[in-house]
Length: 461
Ligand SMILES: [Cu+2]
Image 1 (cartoon, helix red, strand yellow):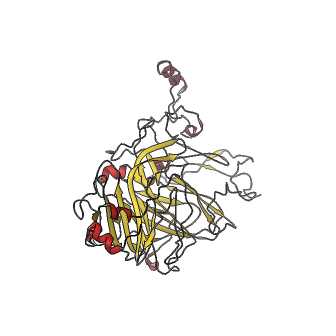
Image 2 (tube, helix red, strand yellow):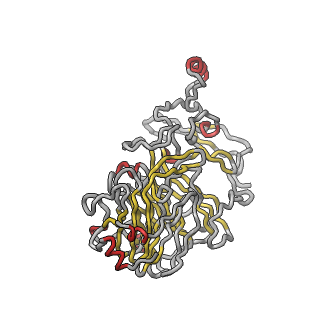
Image 3 (cartoon, helix red, strand yellow):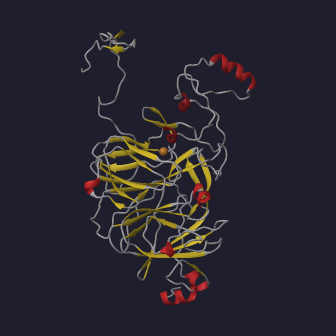
């Protein structure tokens, strides 16, 4: 059934002054359908079927929300609802999200678009949506109680605004915010420039940094946690469940991320230097940019980094806080490095049924390889295997795979990189020198001893 815009407004009592509830049978029929996504894996980029051309983004472990053109307006339909999200193979979480997944689908629009977004609330409590970074009329800003009434369970509201600038944005509730974001309610929003050649890149990846506190063996996040999060995720996925970022050699690559956790994340890329080209405040001026390999993304910030993928290989890409590249662990794990555990372990095993496994006495790496009994629905703390053995990571870790000769739209995992012969770090099998004591400097008042190793064989051969 088609309903004219005029009749639609008349039927729903919709005004353009603020967010208003859509009511009545006629109005309901005029709402675009709300597609849902069953897969937690990266879906192909969604090229626009009408309107201005642009290079669509791809969402790590996510998808872009289809829309329909209705006269001058681009119409979307988000449904806020409980979802089951696979965090990585072997673990699912009961979260809240949009249209079947958490985070919700990415919304892609174009500078100058007139956008209408219907929001249906299927949660057990009220909600709203705030369009983070987006210049909108005050009544469309989505702050429950302040700029609009809360969207009660069962209600559908409509947001309308004209898109004033291109860039990098996100959406999230501004209602019972701590709980709803701790439950996974958020999504990415990208505004493409009107000129398809402005800020053009070959590949454009997006994801949100989020975190959960899910007790090993359980499914529902604890929503009052302030500091002790134990699952550090990108788009509600933990390594090894996070999609690889597959790019062609010499592609111009953009990676955009936004932080909706309770702490900062220094995001680090191996093998390439990048520049921050966009924030949630807009495009950075070219003369303001400098090279980096790590950029901190503070709470509530967004960063877009760009680089030329000039170096073929499998390059680690991760948060540099080492606790954020691990999965859930008990916080009371003791450190036993250097302690003789054998006798202690034997004694404790007699009283602890099922065995006792302290953190290793050589270090922690044995945690990644050993087969520890884990509760159901729990990821190992350090996990993942590469072509050379255990990767010993978790949480906010993925791999940028730079390959020659990829098709423009090919995001398929190409497998592990075949390093050219003689370019992989290898065991030294030549002669080893003894440690020698360096001579103390004449008149040096301290009594510090230094040990240096003098090579006895040539390093190049
Ligand atoms: Cu981090």
